[in-house]
Image (cartoon, rainbow, N blue to C red):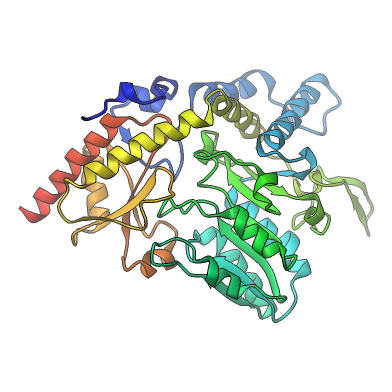
Length: 406
């Protein structure tokens, strides 16, 4: 029997003004999430009533905003099960991954070593390591997929050795939605005392995240994937490894003493946050996390499981549709091909019907090509989606088939 939206554990659609006010089936949350009204209000409140710089002004307005900003650092740390001094604010996952490459590995990398990535990586978790590899004559080693399109851990074991400088892997594939066994990956790397960096961009909105339980050394995510504003991000760096990092950018806000010939920097994590940050965005990130924390993870995961199961079942009614990757062990994100119809054509027709999806190589060109596709169409879900969104998608896809196949 077909489920209805009312049978989903969550009914928070009205919290998201764009979703609630416009007749859209927004199915591109892996690209960016819509924002709840509480997050929008918090950012607006800052600019309307509290706009001031942080860590500088000797006046109450600045001191109040500084306290709010730093309270979000503590909030993020608690949410990740980390310490506040292990949390660095940045613009997003891409910048965070580049920081690990430049602030840590570029100062520690041994010439002729190797860096291990997975076959599932987003370009943001591949290009920074390519630069390091080119600079230090290192080899990029890639964990291949097994026949189930999961990471092949036996192959991963064969790649690890005493010359491995870093293991860096996505927590959840932005193409397949696959959840990778990060805890096991970390345990295997730590047998060689190799640090592990995790791209958590596609994980943080879907599954609980505990850096102590995972055992990772670096963890990165973007606020805008977590119902927070764009231009916000977090780099968790375990204290052991943060002590070995050096700031890649220097300037105002991170010094204790400056002369014309030398300077002294403040301690971590603030020494990695030169210049004026996205103050309003970080404060609103705190509101986004507070919003998420009001909903039990079990409800979030059950809501998405129901919708994903329904979506996969409805895909069976579309002739010529093939889902990329395994159907097991995934969050509510999947990509598909539809006969020989180009994903850009699919997305354009869906858009006319108010159905918004992502199409192309999905910033993971090596993975998409290795799966045998030139490009794919991706559907990704969030808290605000319901069964009607999926019904609209299916109706529109059937229209696509009629247009191209008659």
